[in-house]
Amino acid sequence: MSKIKKLKIGSIELDNNLLLAPMAGISDLPMRLLSKEGGAGLVYTEMVSAKALTYGDAKTKKLCKIHNDERPVSVQIFGGDAHSMGEAAKIVRDGGADIIDINLGCPVRKIAKAGAGAKLLADEKLTAGILSSVVKNANIPVTIKIRTGLIPGQNVAVEILKIAYESGISMAAIHARPASQGHSGEPDIEAFTQACAQSKIPIIANGGIIDEQSAEKFMNIPNCSGLMIGRGAIGNYSIFKRLENYFNNGMILPKPSADEKILWFKKHAALSADYYGQSRGYILLRKVSHYYLKDLPNAAKIRDMFNKVTKTSEFEEVLTLAGERLRL
Picture 1 (tube, rainbow, N blue to C red):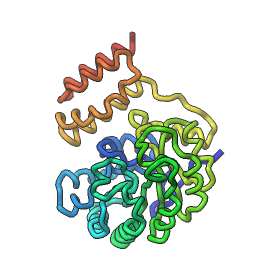
Picture 2: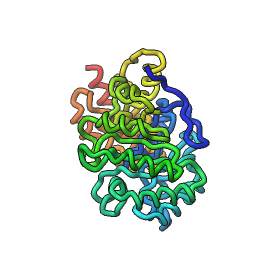
Picture 3: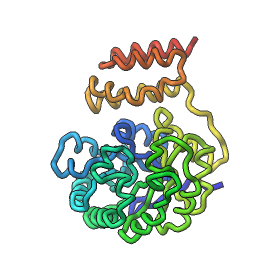
């Protein structure tokens, strides 16, 4: 069985090769801190618009704010032209990022219309220009996150990885699904295997990793250098430590109990309220609350209550109800 081990990305050495994926609207500072506590070797910011950074947009700058307790941290940027991406790389570097990641995999239509994200997989020349511009301006390690292709049966990863290597990219994470599939359906293990076989840079597996069995499918592939976990980590931050224990010691540890999930939820709420202010912090948590509450008795009712919360005293009432439900 493969082992969880240290991973070097350029000059940055990680404690392990288990990474928290960049997730738009989700992998903010509070979640990254929780993932670090849960054992992640590297955490990524949400994807950040290169043009918004160059325009000095305050909300975009906040997405890039880094806490020393989450280091090392990678800031992911997206854009459709080499100049703005290069300028954004300088801003991110000067803001204290340890690593810069380039998004070549986002399937969202709005991002595609801007010629960014997964759309770049269809334009090798433009992609090469963007990668070279970011590497030239970054002066810190640069990585990419890609899809296997745009539609099922397509595997552009092999060619994109060649471009990445020639451009000076230090590592690539491959979401082993085509962009058209979004986050659903089985990962394309064959396409991922082909990409790993021919890559000259480390490859990290991403897509549908939620437990030991789904992780092992990837870790058994030759030249797979690690795992990147996205939605499978929300409310389940100890997954990183559990996977490390499984691959290194052969033990499957229990998944988080409902009580443990509530404790993670409480920590997340406290961090979010502190970072954004109570009202905005609780509103932003609504998009992930179901990950914490879905296994509770009357989860729908409790989540409906949480969706009206705007301050800590109201949140504590929800926690009280959740605790009562757990004891039924």
